[in-house]
View 1: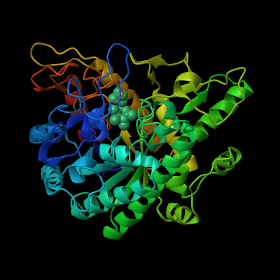
View 2: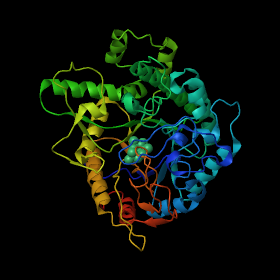
View 3: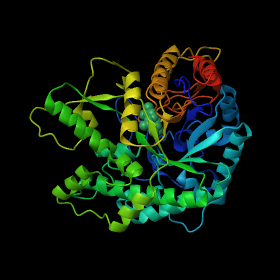
View 4: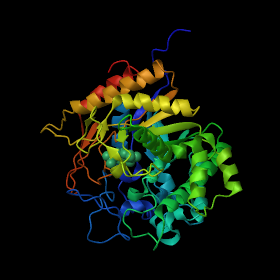
Length: 480
Ligand code: BGP
């Protein structure tokens, strides 16, 4: 057999988005309030906040977003024009179960996704669907404390079962939770609503809560995987992790140890989703903390039986971590406190380190650790774009970023033998940034006329990267 020189012929080129960041229509068709609907926009260095319910005088960017809810036929037509083979989006849980704990699903919500998937299939675009992309019904948080509660496992699994059954002939590729491992940085995470302090109990140990909540999510994910395979054995159900390789800042042994522990703290989620069991360090750590964890033997069986078919991951950057001199190296990883500038790479305006080789490193790291196909379901460059009078945007910086990453991705496949299913750059059409809640951090090949205060025509126009990506797909990644 000759040397591998190309990507698979059925390589899934496409783009990725998430329901709450582009749909809008936050109350349309009986949709309930999601945690994404109570997140304000950040401004002037002030981070996004979660509010207690929807407050009448505040601006919530996800309420309208880019109105994909009404405009999706035109947007999918543009994706088809670029040659997309797949389109990654998520299902808003609150369209299907507005409060999360109803007996019966909401038909209008189910119908919306039927129509959306039909529109994709009309152009032979495979939907790639995330079940929960940073959101859940707000009611589940108020009533049950969100993922603090074991009861939420059943609500999630029921939601998964309903959509798996409904779309079993339209959707083959699924993922359970978006970037499930981001909650390891629990000081700043939205998934257990810790960052606002609003939902924290007095004296609650948030680290323990994070491990407990994550355990319930992982059980829910594993149950969903099993049910999905029963419904349709052809389903490919993946995990989805934020892949941010953590390099030691120096070769000082404490820095190397810190990096190892930080990587363990961030990637144990995949150990469970791919290998079906807790890593030994984590069992020991939880035991040594003296925590009373609700992890049953039955749960461990579920985790073993519900391993994923592939590893979906996002890759934007690497980070360098340093052991603070006075600190004992432990399993805490706090992104803000522990990461330091890497002098060998550039940074974006948002201090995201640009490290294309880190993608090849990450793919090899995952391949060494887990025997699963990989799917790069997010990668991209957030930047402030300048739209010209004719609607064009000259975004060569975005093309440069994507080109450099695709080159490294190809090396990982062709030189290193990594099994890669596809590549879906993030925010293929401009949308609300998850981190800032603003429109001005843009990723798209398609520009959307809207600003951070919510003004604009919502008109779509093509950036220079549109034609570039079209050419990349047409040549299966040969013409960069
Ligand atoms: C990932 C999320 C996305 C997305 C992206 C870019 O972490 O899965 O939802 O938004 O990052 O982040 P941001 O929007 O903060 O630039």
